[in-house]
Image (cartoon, rainbow, N blue to C red; front, side, top):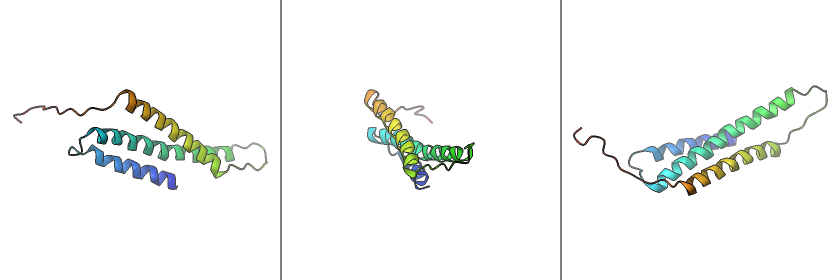
Length: 107
């Protein structure tokens, strides 16, 4: 539950980097990093919890199945690391550049 809340907080913080007055290269990078990591935390933890319930409910035998919190945490950590690697490659290979485009100067 804490990871879902942390992911949603990162989502909400990323909104502040979409304001027109926050235009810089760092703001462009932070915008995608906060969105990406927030998404991975929020939906990764939802996926891990759903997987845990699936494993517990589809047990055909009467054996007790224990899935530790550390296992669920490792799933979420794996998804966040994959997201961070993708964002790091994207930031390194295609850095953002600020460009001001005047659409219609008479409007």
